[in-house]
Image (tube, rainbow, N blue to C red; front, side):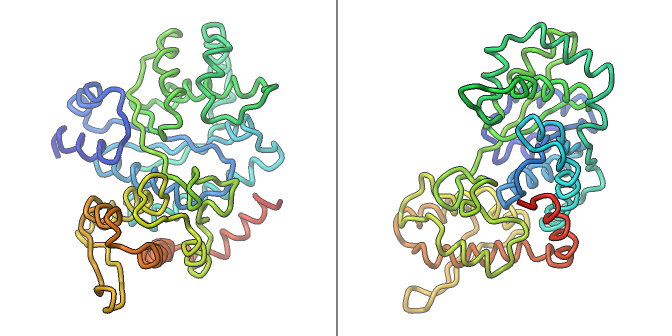
Length: 340
């Protein structure tokens, strides 16, 4: 696979790459570059996480060494109680590999790294202090504004958060940081401030955020907005029935967004169409080999939301079916991590 082919795999379904020229040069220069994504161990993982699980799988296909940072200290900086950090870390480290299993990814080049395993050493702390003498309160707060919970009387932790995320690029020894587009300000902060303390800037790759089932951002703090990884088939189908999916409306439609960024990606990679079962009196089953064709039919009201949502619910239940063999262990760990 040449650099152009690898570039194409990495670019698909992305919102922005800063910069594409740097990424292409990297792919030409390195046989096995490295990338990391950090996930703060806060809310319960939900199906929206499949967006980045699939993108990390793309990096793996493109020959990257992939590091998945389980950011326990970042979780604490974003209001996760310190006394349950280890329990949250344990749940994330158990459930995320199952998500890769759900999509059939080869994870031989995936490494899970615990944030506190390297973020508490003396050199890291020294660099954190050094960066704090370069970054203003304004810039640090702005960087974290779309990621860290904000208030009128913000805690100092919210200002430390983006500085640490920038430093993680250096201490993980990666060429690229990948995140959702909500991370953009932090990623740009890293490009600006790492060189100020003597380190190289990295390539930053971003994918879109997908709306939740109620037309808002899919959020771990709003159970009705998302499908939890541990939801059984009946729960999935029940939530899909209530999902926000107005006939003909594309904007803010979380069901369509999930199909575009998760289900159709999986279908296209397997060379399979997405089948929407329908009664013969309504035209019979319809198949889609591309998201664009599906969206056009939905927009033209040729595809009814009830049929569409039922099919998507069935597909999500099928996607999550590998969870069943891990359910007992995951539910026990989840109960400890989210006892509230």
